[in-house]
Image (cartoon, rainbow, N blue to C red; front, side):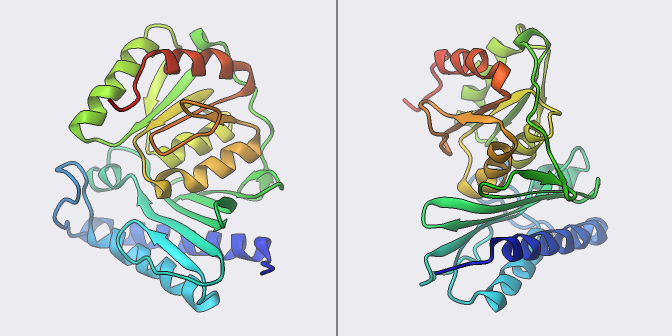
Length: 262
């Protein structure tokens, strides 16, 4: 089935901006729900309202598409296309007012990402990509990131905050922090798009869900960031990204730490 990918990108961007505006408007009146998988896996009524806004509009435009959505509004489809939605990536930052968050929307045909949007509401930045068409920030094409040697590199760190994953992530940080320029902990989507924009030289995401990384990974790849995991393909268990000049060193060091599940 043919699909106008640029129209899909434009709708995803419009919806992400609308959800971001809702999040800014309702931040002072949000209500927290019960934690999900663990005590640090928090959700608010704003997460849910944002997801409903995005899912309902996409369903109206393409009713036969499937959806994977973090807060439970997913649905089956028959078109062969599926949307992967994280309505608020970085809820802990959003709720505590301690850091950035984003709205993430990706469109897949089968197993291949075709469209991606990551919107950061506070900065008013919308990162986007269509497969094979490059990566963009607010409509301006992003150049291939130059990167830096590891001793000068700024490295992004993202991980699920459950006890087992925190222990595995700590092993990576213990190894990287002394030999890198510095590290920054960020939600996974922003980790990846900041690599695309050259703000980070590289990074890793550990034990994510597909909706955490689907949009950011396509944008990073389209900008020229090299992606992988324990092998040549990145996975939700481990996504490593880096500018081409840094990739070999950073990937080798992270893989050598031995952080795969035991």
